[in-house]
Length: 330
Image (cartoon, rainbow, N blue to C red; front, side, top):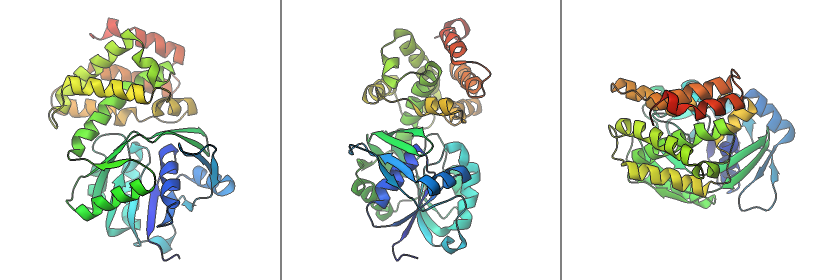
């Protein structure tokens, strides 16, 4: 085994592949990755073709990839980036408890709220840091990934105050070519990203359009405002966010990612499970605990689930999206 410290990237999808390639290219760590059996087999046979945003053409990489990590790694991995879909956390966290060192440092690079709770439960000694990023990445095929935008990444501790730990993650990401800053209020960043995702993802996925197209349509902007107005009473139980802050953030992300197809649309096009229940659905759940209902968000969650399970076609989904004013007050 190499004398370099080990760093595990859990998840070798669109974002995970970009992070793996960027960090592995530094030569500081021996990077290993954990992904599905199908993904592992594909990466071992054909490698992964990744085009970073600063590169003219894609390059082929052959990652150290596993569907289950060998015994030789157990207890020897002290740094881990979690870049899987957030709905995998329930299974992934207890598995990592068998693999990672007792006081490992974990950087969660995911959409969604309260993802860290699964890792607290698996091992309360882990130092958990959240990353909120506007990296854009498309997975064109099983092993072909294109980074469409580097954007900006904010990180912040969730259950610790270890400044050395935070500074190390910042240094790793910055050296890898990303624009990373330490947030003074990571929970607000998480909620702002959740609001952005709750607006852009379901609408973009239903319509099958790039993010910028949403900004051009007055009706869709009215739906966006409705989504935000429902979410804010829930969010404000945890952080201070005004409607103006949230709406401006959504519009800005639509502008800066105008040529991107959102991840939820990519998932539906590939016929895989979306994160709708971990984005809008998670906010609905928190609202329910507070005695609040979010009918518009609930309508969109059901619509996306019908799309991803192929109970309706995209054409039918578009019709139902246009029918929102007859079902939910905007």
